[in-house]
Length: 408
Image 1 (spheres, rainbow, N blue to C red):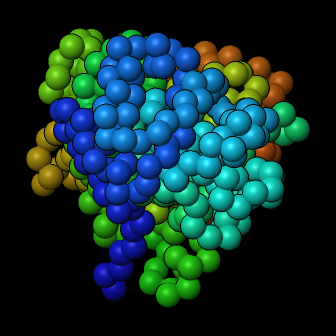
Image 2 (image 1 turned 180 degrees about the vertical axis):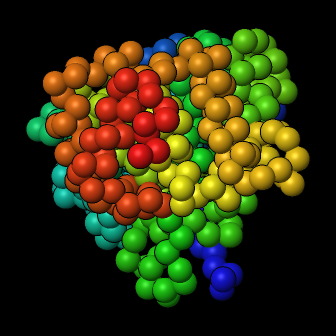
């Protein structure tokens, strides 16, 4: 095999307890006027007031948009941009969960290039650099602080929509695990499971080879040596600490592991991409109105078992990263153990075990399969190919809770 690697990341990533205090110094290098995108809950916290005070002490003028909503409704971005245009920011700072970071990306895009978000749906539609973005996550899950993707909800479409471009990668990501200490157990679980799913799908993504045009024509290009490194780091950290962070939110070491795991997973899938679990979640989530992380995690054991026939070696490495047995164990045995451990871990933190429990109706299974199969950028990344019948069988197995049937 010819060694091949590709990765796209922010210019600067800062991680560690107290790193939020570096924000003024980082922002000062980018300008003197900052639009801050956050949500109403975080805007009311003492730590947010401290962040604003520190920025003002660094002579940075601030405009705060504190009305970010979950899943970033399309028209809410236009409202934010209209309010910010007269302020003329030099940068956009996203502080909060993934939706706040995605709002910052979308605002920077429209403030820089105009038009409407619909003009940029898909891959490589952003024509050039945007206002610099600083991403400060307060949850540990989406990895948006390091990825080239912004996800929004469009009222004219059933499924959520992505804008994917290297120009949307933040200039700086500042990840302070202290900011996640107040996350409730349910959010910790869903966000962390989302991150673990990112890492697994990036590590098991199709390997597409070393075509020099690959990364120039596609945002997500499949697994490579560098994305594998980050994916395995994420699996190791999340495997050992996600359950601990869920059970005891005051556990600083577990919180740090989970946030670093989410960051590393973002570094992996931001270039490698994700696959079938995400493809199925888009229609399933639209029908059930459930959290993205919950849906992808529900699907993950079934998708892993479907892919096991072509990805047993990768599954065995996942098992090793999870601390299961010695690497010398038979590959197939380790692969099965990895799938069972992911299933056990997700159950332990309250992730639903089936699509039925998620709320998907039996009469919508075929529609879900048809929609999932149509999301080509994800399906083509899956290591084992699909046709409609195979997708229907996988979704039926996940609905019934029949893990064995998912491999057929």
